[in-house]
Length: 81
Ligand SMILES: [Zn+2]
Image (cartoon, rainbow, N blue to C red):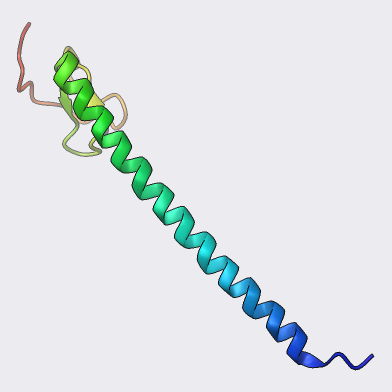
């Protein structure tokens, strides 16, 4: 069999391009999801009160003393207790 290396290299090129496209797709998906999440968080804050965790940026419910995701104490900007 004399197929040579060119075919193999072509396949490797295809694989490489596919990998780059896959990585780009994952990045774009990640960014879009993050944006969507941030928007949802802001909407939640506007509706229910509460705040964002200063450390991990997640939603902290109004009555919470600390972020339940990373346990960072949260200053109550909207103290309503
Ligand atoms: Zn947190």
